Image (cartoon, rainbow, N blue to C red; front, side):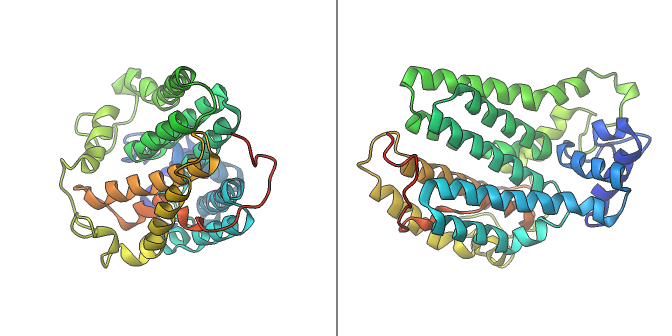
Length: 333
């Protein structure tokens, strides 16, 4: 059953729509799990259609993993060509922590998938200068937020920076587009929170993980570790610059970090004199910034940090030296 805690919630959501919506741990909706529920919805639908079983619980995570690898392949292929895309997809599929988490029913598989979908929408917005596609990226980050709260928002500074620096429209329009995307993020992440907070407390489940039956309390208390203001069990070693290379984390995720950092520095140097909206530089900023922000967040988090959290921090800039194939977008500003 993978994680039996979430398996119980999936069982509950497969027999009760109220439990489905709230992410309740029990069919009677007495209390919710200690996360927002988006990562439970697909397994719960599978369990409704195919019956509750190990297969119906874990197959959605495996499909999320396959989709994540395909998205990485697609995006890196558009950015740096076929060989780099194959290497990136292979690295994504074979990273030890990814092998584990894409067959396990914790929220991290869907968190990773939603953020990669958001990156795909962002890349499409860069190509077309599209406000709606950038808004789609913001909305998908909002869905990721309903899967794993503040961890989903780590990519936001990178997404905003990449579009503001490399977007095709003029600066004023790019700024307006980023604000539109921020509005889409607020709506897509806030609708569920608003409904739950407005729902009479006497007729909804207690918000698990909170101290006062409030979604906001859950979000900020669970997120305090990223801000360095909360303690907790030490599952990933002491916080610090070398945390990602310690005994708990080094073998799970960090085996390609040195190569990726070298590739990132080399790629940014090679694209230093290219036009502002150059797609090759945009790729280095996107994947390099994504990786670096997550590495910093995980390295210095003071609260509960499980090794499996790091599945979302995949480092991809290692293909810097690969020769890019000719494609329809080549030569565009």
